[in-house]
Length: 158
Image (cartoon, rainbow, N blue to C red):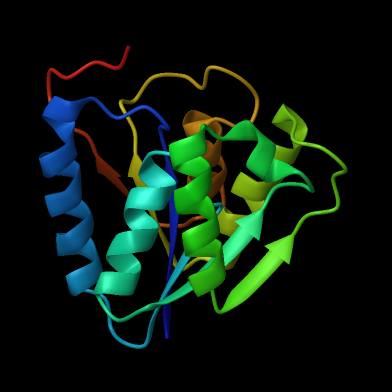
């Protein structure tokens, strides 16, 4: 079994979407089965990854940062969150009463500690707050996890 974790930006520019999809699909296709995708189901990169894991025939495991996490989503992203959460074969809800940077950081750490490899949909810039993509990448690297960064050259986020 291979457990692939995800970290990534919630905001993905339209111009980068196909590049990122192709990169995720390529990495997932190279993994031995059974395949498990580990995600917090956040908007953007996490949800994109989760759908690709399921499309590849893998199991989805969710690490939910806190109670009331769904309150952080837009209406569209919340709908996707619940669809994916309902398809997850394992759900771990961290012991935080409400969404916070500390809870997001803990979720990122949990994913990096439980995965065999990490995919980072990341522009290479520092995290915009505690628990951002850059923090998860740093944590994975400090724990010796292989990190596959997917981001098209020359593309910037908003």
